[in-house]
Length: 339
Length: 106
Image 1 (cartoon, rainbow over the protein chains, first blue to last red):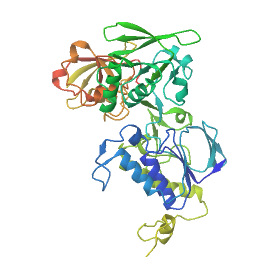
Image 2 (cartoon, one colour; image 1 turned 90 degrees about the horizontal axis):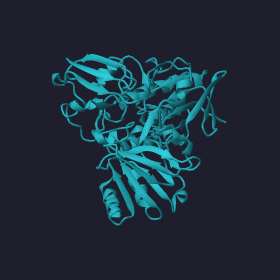
Image 3 (spheres, rainbow over the protein chains, first blue to last red; image 1 turned 135 degrees about the vertical axis):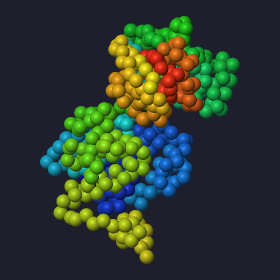
Image 4 (cartoon, chains in turn cyan, purple; image 1 turned 120 degrees about the vertical axis):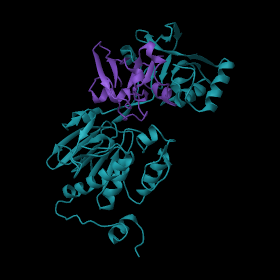
Protein backbone atom coordinates (compact mmCIF):
# COMPACT_ATOMS: atom_id res chain seq x y z
CA UNK A 1 0.00 0.00 0.00
CA UNK A 2 1.25 3.47 -0.92
CA UNK A 3 0.47 6.28 1.54
CA UNK A 4 0.46 9.77 0.12
CA UNK A 5 -0.88 13.25 0.87
CA UNK A 6 -2.73 13.42 -2.42
CA UNK A 7 -3.45 11.11 -5.32
CA UNK A 8 -3.93 12.70 -8.74
CA UNK A 9 -5.95 10.83 -11.33
CA UNK A 10 -4.87 11.92 -14.79
CA UNK A 11 -1.46 13.02 -16.06
CA UNK A 12 -2.67 15.64 -18.52
CA UNK A 13 -1.57 19.27 -18.22
CA UNK A 14 -3.94 19.97 -15.33
CA UNK A 15 -2.82 16.88 -13.38
CA UNK A 16 0.86 17.69 -13.93
CA UNK A 17 0.53 21.30 -12.80
CA UNK A 18 -1.59 20.28 -9.82
CA UNK A 19 1.29 17.99 -8.79
CA UNK A 20 3.62 20.99 -9.05
CA UNK A 21 1.36 23.05 -6.79
CA UNK A 22 1.14 20.25 -4.20
CA UNK A 23 4.91 19.85 -4.10
CA UNK A 24 5.50 23.61 -3.89
CA UNK A 25 3.44 23.78 -0.71
CA UNK A 26 5.23 20.78 0.75
CA UNK A 27 2.80 17.93 0.14
CA UNK A 28 3.73 14.72 -1.58
CA UNK A 29 1.67 13.13 -4.32
CA UNK A 30 1.33 10.25 -6.75
CA UNK A 31 -0.17 10.32 -10.25
CA UNK A 32 -2.12 7.54 -11.95
CA UNK A 33 -2.99 7.53 -15.66
CA UNK A 34 -4.58 4.95 -17.91
CA UNK A 35 -2.34 5.89 -20.85
CA UNK A 36 1.26 4.78 -21.22
CA UNK A 37 2.64 8.32 -21.05
CA UNK A 38 1.96 11.70 -19.49
CA UNK A 39 0.20 14.46 -21.44
CA UNK A 40 -3.42 13.33 -21.65
CA UNK A 41 -5.45 14.79 -24.52
CA UNK A 42 -2.48 17.03 -25.50
CA UNK A 43 -0.40 14.00 -26.36
CA UNK A 44 -3.10 11.59 -27.41
CA UNK A 45 -5.28 13.87 -29.54
CA UNK A 46 -3.14 16.74 -30.75
CA UNK A 47 0.62 16.35 -30.06
CA UNK A 48 1.55 18.40 -33.13
CA UNK A 49 -1.26 20.94 -33.16
CA UNK A 50 -0.26 24.40 -31.98
CA UNK A 51 -1.92 25.85 -28.88
CA UNK A 52 -2.13 29.65 -28.72
CA UNK A 53 -3.77 30.36 -25.39
CA UNK A 54 -1.34 29.30 -22.70
CA UNK A 55 -0.49 32.50 -20.79
CA UNK A 56 2.97 33.83 -21.67
CA UNK A 57 3.48 31.09 -24.26
CA UNK A 58 2.52 32.58 -27.64
CA UNK A 59 2.55 29.22 -29.38
CA UNK A 60 3.40 25.64 -28.44
CA UNK A 61 2.38 22.14 -29.44
CA UNK A 62 0.66 19.68 -27.13
CA UNK A 63 3.90 17.76 -26.92
CA UNK A 64 5.98 20.84 -26.05
CA UNK A 65 3.49 21.86 -23.39
CA UNK A 66 3.67 18.40 -21.84
CA UNK A 67 7.46 18.33 -21.94
CA UNK A 68 7.63 21.76 -20.30
CA UNK A 69 5.23 20.74 -17.56
CA UNK A 70 7.29 17.59 -16.95
CA UNK A 71 10.44 19.73 -16.79
CA UNK A 72 8.72 22.00 -14.29
CA UNK A 73 8.06 19.10 -11.89
CA UNK A 74 11.44 17.47 -12.46
CA UNK A 75 12.93 18.85 -9.20
CA UNK A 76 10.32 16.87 -7.29
CA UNK A 77 10.05 13.22 -6.56
CA UNK A 78 6.62 12.26 -7.86
CA UNK A 79 5.48 8.67 -8.34
CA UNK A 80 3.94 8.04 -11.76
CA UNK A 81 1.72 5.02 -12.23
CA UNK A 82 1.05 4.81 -15.96
CA UNK A 83 -1.02 2.18 -17.78
CA UNK A 84 -3.22 1.95 -14.71
CA UNK A 85 -6.81 2.89 -14.28
CA UNK A 86 -8.31 3.77 -10.92
CA UNK A 87 -11.23 1.43 -10.36
CA UNK A 88 -12.39 1.74 -6.78
CA UNK A 89 -12.49 4.46 -4.17
CA UNK A 90 -13.55 3.63 -0.62
CA UNK A 91 -13.71 5.78 2.51
CA UNK A 92 -11.69 4.40 5.44
CA UNK A 93 -11.95 6.72 8.46
CA UNK A 94 -10.31 9.98 7.35
CA UNK A 95 -8.70 8.51 4.27
CA UNK A 96 -9.64 7.27 0.86
CA UNK A 97 -8.49 3.83 -0.18
CA UNK A 98 -7.96 3.85 -3.92
CA UNK A 99 -7.47 0.67 -5.97
CA UNK A 100 -6.25 0.41 -9.56
CA UNK A 101 -7.09 -2.23 -12.15
CA UNK A 102 -3.63 -3.68 -11.59
CA UNK A 103 -4.21 -4.19 -7.90
CA UNK A 104 -2.17 -1.26 -6.61
CA UNK A 105 -3.61 0.34 -3.46
CA UNK A 106 -3.21 3.93 -2.29
CA UNK A 107 -4.23 5.42 1.05
CA UNK A 108 -4.69 9.18 1.00
CA UNK A 109 -6.83 11.92 2.54
CA UNK A 110 -7.06 13.66 -0.86
CA UNK A 111 -8.03 12.41 -4.30
CA UNK A 112 -7.81 14.92 -7.14
CA UNK A 113 -9.60 13.87 -10.30
CA UNK A 114 -7.91 15.56 -13.27
CA UNK A 115 -9.40 13.09 -15.68
CA UNK A 116 -10.10 15.26 -18.72
CA UNK A 117 -13.06 13.72 -20.47
CA UNK A 118 -12.54 10.34 -18.87
CA UNK A 119 -10.16 7.51 -19.62
CA UNK A 120 -9.11 6.67 -23.14
CA UNK A 121 -10.26 3.33 -24.49
CA UNK A 122 -9.88 2.03 -28.03
CA UNK A 123 -12.97 2.28 -30.21
CA UNK A 124 -14.08 -1.26 -30.97
CA UNK A 125 -15.92 -2.99 -33.81
CA UNK A 126 -19.66 -2.47 -33.43
CA UNK A 127 -21.08 -6.02 -33.82
CA UNK A 128 -21.52 -7.81 -30.49
CA UNK A 129 -20.13 -11.10 -31.83
CA UNK A 130 -16.69 -9.48 -32.04
CA UNK A 131 -16.37 -9.51 -28.27
CA UNK A 132 -15.88 -13.27 -28.01
CA UNK A 133 -12.85 -13.10 -30.31
CA UNK A 134 -11.31 -10.14 -28.53
CA UNK A 135 -7.70 -10.71 -27.45
CA UNK A 136 -7.77 -14.06 -29.29
CA UNK A 137 -8.06 -13.04 -32.91
CA UNK A 138 -9.47 -9.50 -32.76
CA UNK A 139 -7.12 -6.88 -31.31
CA UNK A 140 -7.06 -3.12 -30.84
CA UNK A 141 -3.36 -2.85 -30.03
CA UNK A 142 -0.26 -4.89 -30.78
CA UNK A 143 1.48 -6.12 -27.67
CA UNK A 144 3.24 -9.26 -28.76
CA UNK A 145 4.39 -9.08 -32.39
CA UNK A 146 5.16 -12.82 -32.49
CA UNK A 147 1.43 -13.61 -32.51
CA UNK A 148 1.16 -11.87 -35.85
CA UNK A 149 3.77 -13.78 -37.83
CA UNK A 150 2.87 -16.02 -40.77
CA UNK A 151 -0.82 -15.25 -40.61
CA UNK A 152 -3.49 -13.57 -42.67
CA UNK A 153 -4.17 -10.24 -41.01
CA UNK A 154 -6.95 -7.77 -41.77
CA UNK A 155 -6.18 -4.28 -40.54
CA UNK A 156 -8.85 -1.55 -40.28
CA UNK A 157 -8.16 2.16 -40.10
CA UNK A 158 -6.56 5.05 -41.94
CA UNK A 159 -4.18 6.55 -39.42
CA UNK A 160 -0.56 5.94 -38.56
CA UNK A 161 -1.18 2.87 -36.39
CA UNK A 162 -3.05 1.05 -39.15
CA UNK A 163 -0.50 2.00 -41.82
CA UNK A 164 2.60 1.30 -39.72
CA UNK A 165 1.40 -2.15 -38.71
CA UNK A 166 0.30 -2.96 -42.25
CA UNK A 167 3.83 -2.21 -43.46
CA UNK A 168 5.43 -4.10 -40.58
CA UNK A 169 3.30 -7.25 -40.82
CA UNK A 170 3.53 -7.42 -44.61
CA UNK A 171 7.10 -8.66 -44.04
CA UNK A 172 5.93 -11.97 -42.61
CA UNK A 173 2.18 -12.17 -43.18
CA UNK A 174 -0.51 -11.64 -45.76
CA UNK A 175 -2.07 -8.26 -45.03
CA UNK A 176 -5.45 -6.78 -45.98
CA UNK A 177 -5.78 -3.08 -45.23
CA UNK A 178 -9.34 -1.77 -45.07
CA UNK A 179 -10.33 1.89 -44.74
CA UNK A 180 -13.64 3.75 -45.12
CA UNK A 181 -12.34 6.32 -47.64
CA UNK A 182 -9.54 6.72 -50.16
CA UNK A 183 -7.57 9.30 -48.21
CA UNK A 184 -5.40 8.18 -45.34
CA UNK A 185 -4.61 10.47 -42.45
CA UNK A 186 -1.27 8.84 -41.65
CA UNK A 187 2.16 10.21 -42.58
CA UNK A 188 2.57 10.62 -46.36
CA UNK A 189 5.78 8.58 -46.41
CA UNK A 190 3.96 5.61 -44.88
CA UNK A 191 1.01 6.03 -47.25
CA UNK A 192 3.49 5.93 -50.19
CA UNK A 193 5.09 2.82 -48.73
CA UNK A 194 1.71 1.10 -48.41
CA UNK A 195 0.86 1.97 -52.03
CA UNK A 196 4.25 0.59 -53.11
CA UNK A 197 3.62 -2.65 -51.19
CA UNK A 198 0.20 -2.86 -52.81
CA UNK A 199 1.86 -2.67 -56.24
CA UNK A 200 4.25 -5.43 -55.22
CA UNK A 201 1.28 -7.53 -54.15
CA UNK A 202 2.31 -7.59 -50.51
CA UNK A 203 -0.66 -5.66 -49.18
CA UNK A 204 -4.19 -5.96 -50.44
CA UNK A 205 -5.99 -2.62 -50.17
CA UNK A 206 -9.75 -2.16 -49.72
CA UNK A 207 -10.71 1.50 -49.61
CA UNK A 208 -14.29 2.75 -49.16
CA UNK A 209 -14.97 -0.49 -47.31
CA UNK A 210 -15.98 -0.97 -43.71
CA UNK A 211 -16.31 -3.84 -41.31
CA UNK A 212 -19.64 -5.67 -41.50
CA UNK A 213 -19.55 -8.99 -39.70
CA UNK A 214 -17.45 -11.81 -38.41
CA UNK A 215 -17.74 -15.55 -39.11
CA UNK A 216 -16.54 -18.47 -37.06
CA UNK A 217 -17.76 -20.51 -34.12
CA UNK A 218 -14.86 -21.12 -31.76
CA UNK A 219 -12.21 -19.79 -34.03
CA UNK A 220 -12.38 -16.72 -36.27
CA UNK A 221 -12.66 -17.91 -39.87
CA UNK A 222 -13.51 -14.91 -42.00
CA UNK A 223 -14.92 -11.44 -41.96
CA UNK A 224 -17.27 -9.58 -44.27
CA UNK A 225 -16.61 -6.05 -45.36
CA UNK A 226 -19.03 -3.79 -47.14
CA UNK A 227 -18.69 -0.66 -49.27
CA UNK A 228 -20.95 2.39 -49.58
CA UNK A 229 -23.00 0.67 -52.30
CA UNK A 230 -23.59 -2.35 -50.06
CA UNK A 231 -21.22 -4.55 -52.04
CA UNK A 232 -19.97 -7.26 -49.70
CA UNK A 233 -16.59 -8.97 -49.81
CA UNK A 234 -15.65 -11.94 -47.64
CA UNK A 235 -12.06 -12.16 -46.48
CA UNK A 236 -10.51 -15.28 -44.96
CA UNK A 237 -8.47 -14.08 -42.05
CA UNK A 238 -6.72 -15.31 -38.91
CA UNK A 239 -6.40 -11.99 -37.18
CA UNK A 240 -8.29 -8.69 -37.25
CA UNK A 241 -6.80 -5.44 -36.01
CA UNK A 242 -8.92 -2.31 -35.51
CA UNK A 243 -7.35 1.13 -35.23
CA UNK A 244 -10.23 3.60 -35.00
CA UNK A 245 -8.64 5.90 -32.48
CA UNK A 246 -9.55 6.29 -28.87
CA UNK A 247 -12.81 7.20 -27.25
CA UNK A 248 -13.09 8.78 -23.86
CA UNK A 249 -15.30 7.28 -21.22
CA UNK A 250 -15.91 8.39 -17.69
CA UNK A 251 -15.48 4.75 -16.67
CA UNK A 252 -15.53 3.70 -13.01
CA UNK A 253 -15.59 7.35 -11.78
CA UNK A 254 -19.31 7.28 -12.56
CA UNK A 255 -19.81 4.87 -9.65
CA UNK A 256 -18.10 6.82 -6.89
CA UNK A 257 -21.17 8.61 -5.58
CA UNK A 258 -20.16 11.98 -7.02
CA UNK A 259 -22.70 14.51 -8.27
CA UNK A 260 -22.45 14.35 -12.04
CA UNK A 261 -23.80 16.55 -14.78
CA UNK A 262 -23.66 14.53 -17.99
CA UNK A 263 -19.98 13.51 -18.10
CA UNK A 264 -18.67 16.19 -15.76
CA UNK A 265 -18.32 16.36 -11.98
CA UNK A 266 -19.89 19.20 -9.99
CA UNK A 267 -17.51 21.12 -7.74
CA UNK A 268 -17.44 24.29 -5.66
CA UNK A 269 -15.19 27.11 -6.80
CA UNK A 270 -13.34 27.61 -3.54
CA UNK A 271 -11.68 24.21 -3.19
CA UNK A 272 -12.88 22.47 -6.35
CA UNK A 273 -14.20 19.82 -4.02
CA UNK A 274 -16.96 17.44 -5.08
CA UNK A 275 -19.87 16.45 -2.87
CA UNK A 276 -17.44 13.98 -1.22
CA UNK A 277 -15.06 15.53 1.29
CA UNK A 278 -11.46 15.07 0.15
CA UNK A 279 -12.33 14.30 -3.47
CA UNK A 280 -11.68 17.16 -5.84
CA UNK A 281 -12.15 17.54 -9.59
CA UNK A 282 -10.11 19.92 -11.74
CA UNK A 283 -9.65 20.60 -15.45
CA UNK A 284 -12.05 19.58 -18.22
CA UNK A 285 -13.84 17.04 -16.04
CA UNK A 286 -15.13 19.53 -13.46
CA UNK A 287 -18.19 21.69 -13.81
CA UNK A 288 -19.38 24.86 -12.07
CA UNK A 289 -21.22 27.98 -13.23
CA UNK A 290 -19.07 29.70 -15.84
CA UNK A 291 -16.68 26.75 -16.34
CA UNK A 292 -14.37 27.17 -19.32
CA UNK A 293 -12.70 24.10 -20.77
CA UNK A 294 -9.32 25.76 -21.18
CA UNK A 295 -5.95 24.48 -20.02
CA UNK A 296 -5.35 27.73 -18.14
CA UNK A 297 -8.54 27.20 -16.14
CA UNK A 298 -7.26 23.75 -15.14
CA UNK A 299 -4.07 25.31 -13.79
CA UNK A 300 -6.05 27.70 -11.58
CA UNK A 301 -8.36 24.95 -10.37
CA UNK A 302 -5.42 22.69 -9.52
CA UNK A 303 -3.67 25.45 -7.56
CA UNK A 304 -6.73 25.97 -5.38
CA UNK A 305 -7.45 22.27 -4.92
CA UNK A 306 -3.83 21.77 -3.81
CA UNK A 307 -4.29 24.35 -1.01
CA UNK A 308 -7.48 22.59 0.06
CA UNK A 309 -5.53 19.31 0.26
CA UNK A 310 -3.15 20.88 2.76
CA UNK A 311 -5.86 21.11 5.43
CA UNK A 312 -6.68 17.42 5.28
CA UNK A 313 -3.08 16.21 4.86
CA UNK A 314 -1.65 18.43 7.64
CA UNK A 315 -4.58 19.02 10.00
CA UNK A 316 -2.29 20.33 12.76
CA UNK A 317 -0.35 22.79 10.63
CA UNK A 318 -1.33 26.13 9.28
CA UNK A 319 -0.91 26.77 5.58
CA UNK A 320 1.04 29.91 4.90
CA UNK A 321 0.88 31.57 1.50
CA UNK A 322 4.31 32.18 -0.06
CA UNK A 323 5.67 33.37 -3.39
CA UNK A 324 8.21 31.31 -5.32
CA UNK A 325 10.20 34.50 -5.90
CA UNK A 326 10.87 35.12 -2.22
CA UNK A 327 10.29 31.93 -0.21
CA UNK A 328 13.42 30.13 0.97
CA UNK A 329 11.36 27.05 1.82
CA UNK A 330 9.99 26.82 -1.70
CA UNK A 331 13.45 27.38 -3.19
CA UNK A 332 14.74 24.52 -1.08
CA UNK A 333 11.95 22.29 -2.32
CA UNK A 334 12.84 23.26 -5.89
CA UNK A 335 16.52 22.66 -5.18
CA UNK A 336 17.52 26.14 -6.31
CA UNK A 337 19.85 28.49 -4.49
CA UNK A 338 18.28 31.35 -2.60
CA UNK A 339 19.85 34.80 -2.84
CA UNK B 1 -33.78 31.00 -37.08
CA UNK B 2 -33.73 27.72 -38.92
CA UNK B 3 -35.91 24.71 -38.24
CA UNK B 4 -33.78 21.60 -37.73
CA UNK B 5 -35.05 18.07 -37.26
CA UNK B 6 -32.99 15.54 -35.36
CA UNK B 7 -34.13 11.94 -35.71
CA UNK B 8 -32.83 9.57 -33.06
CA UNK B 9 -31.81 6.05 -33.96
CA UNK B 10 -34.99 4.73 -32.28
CA UNK B 11 -37.12 6.98 -34.48
CA UNK B 12 -37.84 9.70 -31.90
CA UNK B 13 -38.01 12.98 -33.76
CA UNK B 14 -37.17 16.42 -32.40
CA UNK B 15 -37.78 19.56 -34.43
CA UNK B 16 -36.37 22.75 -32.95
CA UNK B 17 -35.66 26.32 -34.00
CA UNK B 18 -31.95 27.07 -33.91
CA UNK B 19 -30.52 30.58 -34.08
CA UNK B 20 -28.26 31.55 -36.95
CA UNK B 21 -24.59 31.52 -36.08
CA UNK B 22 -24.86 28.42 -33.92
CA UNK B 23 -23.91 24.97 -35.11
CA UNK B 24 -26.16 21.95 -35.51
CA UNK B 25 -24.36 20.40 -32.52
CA UNK B 26 -25.09 23.42 -30.34
CA UNK B 27 -28.72 23.37 -31.45
CA UNK B 28 -29.00 19.81 -30.14
CA UNK B 29 -27.12 20.35 -26.89
CA UNK B 30 -29.01 23.55 -26.01
CA UNK B 31 -32.31 21.80 -26.59
CA UNK B 32 -31.27 18.68 -24.62
CA UNK B 33 -31.70 16.39 -27.58
CA UNK B 34 -30.32 12.97 -26.64
CA UNK B 35 -27.85 11.29 -28.97
CA UNK B 36 -25.44 14.17 -29.55
CA UNK B 37 -22.73 14.54 -26.92
CA UNK B 38 -20.32 17.18 -28.23
CA UNK B 39 -17.72 16.24 -25.61
CA UNK B 40 -15.00 18.58 -26.85
CA UNK B 41 -17.36 21.53 -27.11
CA UNK B 42 -17.13 21.95 -30.87
CA UNK B 43 -13.37 21.87 -31.30
CA UNK B 44 -13.35 18.95 -33.74
CA UNK B 45 -11.24 17.05 -31.23
CA UNK B 46 -13.67 14.19 -30.62
CA UNK B 47 -16.29 12.51 -32.75
CA UNK B 48 -19.24 12.56 -30.39
CA UNK B 49 -21.52 14.91 -32.36
CA UNK B 50 -21.60 12.59 -35.36
CA UNK B 51 -24.76 12.72 -37.51
CA UNK B 52 -25.92 11.33 -40.84
CA UNK B 53 -27.24 14.18 -42.96
CA UNK B 54 -30.40 13.32 -44.93
CA UNK B 55 -29.10 12.75 -48.45
CA UNK B 56 -30.94 15.59 -50.22
CA UNK B 57 -29.43 18.00 -47.70
CA UNK B 58 -25.85 16.77 -47.89
CA UNK B 59 -24.75 19.10 -50.71
CA UNK B 60 -26.76 22.07 -49.42
CA UNK B 61 -24.95 22.49 -46.11
CA UNK B 62 -21.46 23.96 -45.81
CA UNK B 63 -18.63 21.68 -46.98
CA UNK B 64 -16.56 19.56 -44.61
CA UNK B 65 -13.85 21.35 -42.65
CA UNK B 66 -10.22 20.45 -43.12
CA UNK B 67 -9.52 17.49 -40.86
CA UNK B 68 -13.19 16.70 -40.32
CA UNK B 69 -12.95 13.41 -42.22
CA UNK B 70 -9.96 12.42 -40.07
CA UNK B 71 -12.19 12.72 -37.00
CA UNK B 72 -15.12 10.99 -38.72
CA UNK B 73 -12.80 7.99 -39.26
CA UNK B 74 -12.94 7.63 -35.50
CA UNK B 75 -16.71 7.98 -35.15
CA UNK B 76 -19.15 5.15 -34.49
CA UNK B 77 -20.29 3.54 -37.77
CA UNK B 78 -19.59 6.37 -40.21
CA UNK B 79 -20.94 6.33 -43.77
CA UNK B 80 -20.88 8.62 -46.81
CA UNK B 81 -23.50 10.93 -45.26
CA UNK B 82 -21.56 11.34 -42.04
CA UNK B 83 -20.74 14.79 -40.70
CA UNK B 84 -19.66 16.22 -37.38
CA UNK B 85 -22.61 18.41 -36.43
CA UNK B 86 -20.30 20.94 -34.73
CA UNK B 87 -19.02 21.78 -38.21
CA UNK B 88 -22.44 22.42 -39.75
CA UNK B 89 -23.25 26.12 -39.56
CA UNK B 90 -26.82 27.16 -39.00
CA UNK B 91 -28.06 29.72 -41.54
CA UNK B 92 -31.53 30.43 -42.91
CA UNK B 93 -30.42 28.49 -46.00
CA UNK B 94 -30.60 25.26 -44.06
CA UNK B 95 -34.10 25.87 -42.69
CA UNK B 96 -35.73 22.44 -42.75
CA UNK B 97 -32.51 20.42 -42.39
CA UNK B 98 -32.94 16.83 -41.29
CA UNK B 99 -30.18 14.84 -39.61
CA UNK B 100 -30.26 11.26 -38.37
CA UNK B 101 -28.41 10.35 -35.19
CA UNK B 102 -26.27 7.22 -34.93
CA UNK B 103 -27.15 4.39 -32.55
CA UNK B 104 -24.56 5.80 -30.15
CA UNK B 105 -21.66 8.22 -30.10
CA UNK B 106 -19.18 6.14 -28.09
